[in-house]
Image (tube, rainbow over all chains, first blue to last red; front, side):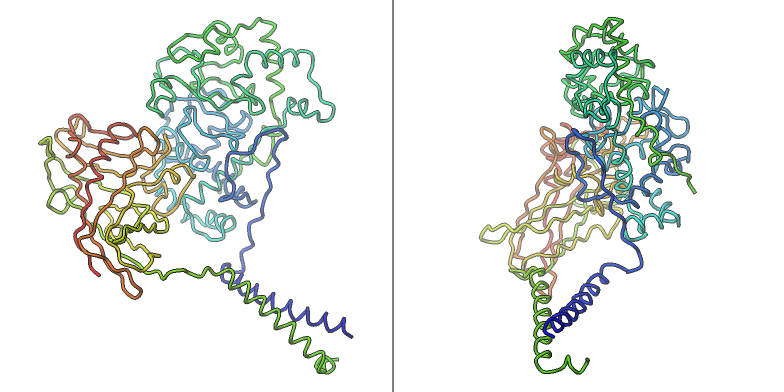
Length: 353
Length: 262
């Protein structure tokens, strides 16, 4: 009998509590919209902690889906020709395959090559010159640059607010139909945040997955890499995220690099060290895409370096590479291709309606 | 069965546990509510834009700077943030963080309501012209700080703290247009400036009343002192740097208190 009483009392308690909780919940939620589903990103073993702070922008299934749709929506550009994905092609490691300089609306051209955008959550700064300081605001630059997507942000937001499909997706991702720039940029950030590349053959070998081993040539290439490249292209991201002048002769583009950002002459023609992950899929190379083939890059470091006041001491005397070493490096770099990034259906283009 | 529940002993236990439940609920409710240590009220600030001694008339008003160059103004915007109030004892009260963008073209932006002001009597007011460094590095922001307001440098992340645009025959651009965009939050080009103004009368912030402080913002001060800005040499400023710093030093002086109405 006593146990029964306790049971009933507990039940009454529970009902009261639930009613209370429901009442509170009802105030903040209209009750009909399901909450966005949280997503946990699987991060590669041995990678550092992400730099991007997810606390204000937790990943959700709906947020990522909205970001993906935005990423591939060409209507975000001034003349509906250029989407983010137009230049950031999945098969090219989210760079622009075979295009030295970026393309833009009205047939315009930018002044730098499209950088591959994966592992962005690990980056401290963005763009070749590090001018952008937060992943969330990164898309702002290509969206509004007249040589890229060239859009007026206010106009764009108005247009999106008028689109029932977007209203539906914003509702699903953020709880209301309101289209704001903050929501838009956070959704794009969510999608880009999921583009993580850490599942190449190299990673399998390093993490001893499934008995993976380098071939003799790959191993030899890895040794060359560690000796001659790894100081700047630091593992596991294959960039140390510094800005360096690698001795490229200044060309007709007259790009001063990071000096434009810092106003400091010591930063003249310095650019961010790019990652080598997926490098064989992301030609052309260098900030201005001047080399189409990785062997041209090897040759440049071997005998093409032009020393200026800001040339990095590590490349000042060139980096000598024999033909055998170049071949070995090629085989090693090939192990950095991550097909789970390049062929992941979760990143592919979506139809725009 | 139902009847048996209401047998005296059962009923007592039942009621007791229900009450306990309710108490625990109401207790947790109380702990969630922050009991304010002081009472809060609000304060209204209004800004009237001037050029020297005359109210600013965009596009049509013609003015002359210290370098004796004529000019007109088409855009005049500035951020205000990090408000503080000072009482007669010198005690500084920092108000909750708010960001306002005053745009001469939008009248509603010229009236600012500061809420959550502790009731009291204050003799001075302080604020920051611009957006503090933290918000310059914290990703995409909303409201007054939203990027579509056109006050954010995309290519070199950071807010434009204040903006003055117009035309002058002395300007070196083809269309004789000048654009002074002042920003920069990092040393050595940190253009953040604090304004500190003593009020001509004590303002009393109290519940049930909304005292009003009115200020004048003089756009001419951007160009005059301590650094004379000539459109012939400074036509376009669109980056952090020495030009932006010079103008920021000037516009730090642009605000004056007009009235205090309790």
